[in-house]
Length: 162
Image 1 (cartoon, rainbow, N blue to C red):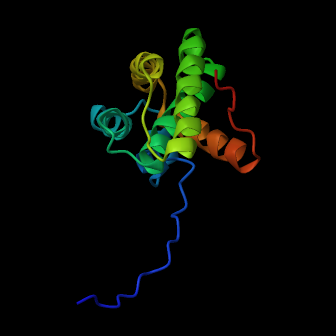
Image 2 (cartoon, rainbow, N blue to C red; image 1 turned 60 degrees about the vertical axis):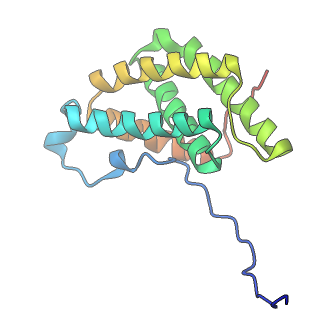
């Protein structure tokens, strides 16, 4: 016998402009902001984008994991634009191209994942980004995050997808 069940109306969650990178939004003080990040803080940031990337590889991702990957890539891009690893700009551009191909495909198919070229480009970009965060101060990373949020809020998002 069938039962009449009430279903909640679907309400999509807002996707954060910073993905899962809340570690760099934590309270701060001026003295520690001028220092490089600690090994634990670097590990926390790396884990956030590496876990999101892994979910994208295994087919267990949704828009939140994609957003975490893209937020990391955008932070990396801003850091490079500001002189921390500017030689990596081509890698970040290629990675963002791949990420946006994934978004276009997810819009069409409902499945979040990267193609082969994107996987390679994002692996390289994340390795470069880890080098950046080893050399950047907490304040530089926080300012890059703020810049990414300002750009997203202003609608200035990367849209070049090959």
